[in-house]
Amino acid sequence: MTDMIDQPKLPPLVFVRAGNYTYARTYTAQWREKGDKSTKQSVKNTTLRVGRINNNTGKGVIDFDRSFIEQHPELVQFVVTRESDESKADEPNHYRLVFTPKDPQKELQHPYEIKYSHIGATLVLDSMLLHDPLVTVLEQTFPDDWREILSFAYYLVICPDGIADHFCRFAEDTLLPSAKEFQPHHLPRLFQRIKHEDIMTFFKDYLKLLTVNKKISTERFWAVDSTSISTYAKLENACCGHNKQGELLPQLNVMLITDEITGRPLFFQLFNGAVTDMTECIETFELLYGLGVHSFVVVADRGFFSKKNLQKIIELGYHFVMCVPYLKASSFQKYADAAMAAMAADLHYDESSRLDMYTCTKKADLDGGVSAWVHVFHDPAAAADEANDYKTQIKEAIKLYKGRKELTPEMTDFINDNFLHDDKGTFQVNEHGEPLINKAVYQTTSNNCGVFMVLSDSVKLTDIALRAFTRRNIIEENFKTLKVRMKLRREHTGSDASLVGKSFIQFVALSIYSMLEAKLSTAKRSEKEGKIDALPHHSVATCLDELNSISQYHIKSKHLIVVSQLSKAQRETLELFGVKPPMTHYEKDAVPANIGGKAPKPHGYDLHKAAKEIVK
Image (cartoon, rainbow, N blue to C red; front, side, top):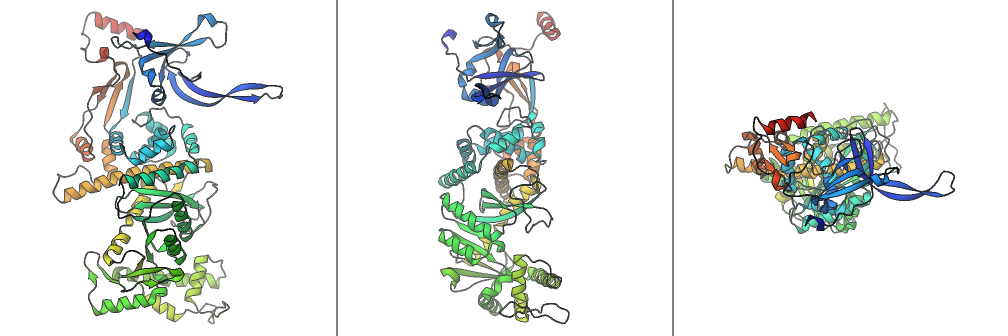
């Protein structure tokens, strides 16, 4: 019956000897002109490794990569060998492929090979991502590369190193979604295959599937923020701007959107380092609208506040909960005064937040036809710090003006708002050449220290507005994960072609890490309420360290996987994430002759036979 099995039809293969192995690669042929342009010749182009022979003679059994077998599942039924073709011995390419059907009753004659791998963290990530929209859309958008993308994302999640150059060493002894043997040149090529257009297609489908599958909160409060990443590389969008880490280096800006309830990152975009938060916000929401993203409530801090932004958000059909910086609270001074008077006359103190809270009875009419509820909060603990910051900024402005230094647009606006000048913009100065402070503005701003306002076109209740604004701290945790766990304080990518792809995989890794954080947070709440026993670990980092010490031996000739003995803490950490402890087992495609059996006898024929094999 084995003769009736159809022989697999494989694409053209080329074999290359390198080191101790012979690598099988697929290729596409392309016609190119010769150097003298007299004629054309066929040239192999776009080569891709699909397997290897475990020697450098060019002959032997071909061990095909898992991804190639998935494309040609009929290969599972054959042992494929590359042999010399005696009838073509005089020709340069005198080899042929021999397809031998596997006999399930005979033990396969593979070389004795053992593979050691760390498996614990991968088992948890695989289980968590099973049927998740993240992987579903990754596979749809990047059908040829999604396993490699996930493998590098796993590395960024598991390994606190986070340096791309160390990934190949990590992949050698860690079970990953891709069984490919990674070489240093693979990552840059992977990054470069991920294009802007593919990423936007991913986000369009991803956000739609998250909504359909109800993987994000129906409240749809989405936190928006940006951060700067310094770099020494000469990248297209690396420019000097307001560096939030205070480094005097060119920078890139990263915009991130996160669901407040689940903590799941939803969207990211890279920006020119000189672009301000206010400008970024408008372009981002234009893009989301173009991708067909459903309406949600934008939750943003004071860096994004501008009436132009609010107008654009409403125009596109979205809503907002946005903080007004205390330096700009004078625009809403009558609402602040009304709130402070109400707080003085009656108790508006909230014990849980330790803030005085008040919402004005009517919507405020802003420019451009925008109206919003004004929620006023007073934080006595922050008042002193804000007063010191304001006075420091006043001193810095005087120093810059007197020294005739070049001013940033933000500092120019600050000086215009806080110092006396006439209609033509000429400032009044004292005998020392210092601009005179506008005392009325100074007094009002000082009184507003400790006061912050939250505007919303859709949220009327004070406590909901405060909860929405305070929960946006989840996005700060996301940035902390990127910069601390994944070592993204500085961008080390040296080319624009690789930057986009690498940044996208970092987003995927951040999404996976946030899922781990969400699961652990749920478990910690249950522990606090006494619903479960004490947890083995209370941080994702220590959980991953514990999991990554779980290992296995894969004895390929026996199709046997032997799992290391698990400790109590390892078992509890696996169970914490809903994963059953792994057990020693045979592979699914193991032939019956390899399963079971007894150990060789300590003497006699079996021992002598084994010794002869070792000598050979």
